[in-house]
Image: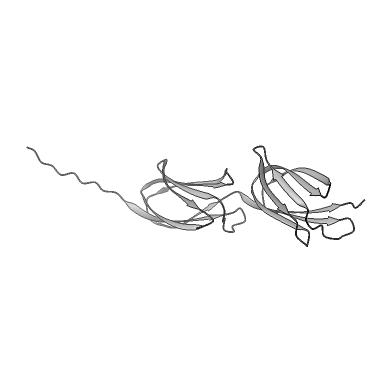
Length: 171
């Protein structure tokens, strides 16, 4: 009987991952999935942990971020030594509306619904100051603003934090 020994050597490194929105603020909604050489390793709920650490083998590491069932970011590196922190920027932005009547009074209770080609992505109702805000993945949208029984509709593209003033005429 011929006896031989085989030794397997694996290099494992620590990697801390931080997921941020397009404005570099922490993304606190969605998931971040980690892959090594194309194979899934872990998935993290960003509402529970925005910064997380992994011990990963040497190889191609990808972090994919999803927000409201839409892919919003991905970063791939070749991990061959410990990296202090890897920041993944997700294409998620603030869309805010300042809603007023033509009298200058803030319009409280106004519904704002945002849809893309897949369906509804976000909705908000204006507060007592007339402000309605939501986080959305970057993209092209149809926006529907409902003042009582009147509706205004807009189409637009979101590529950065955007704030829009809307004045609605009182009849």
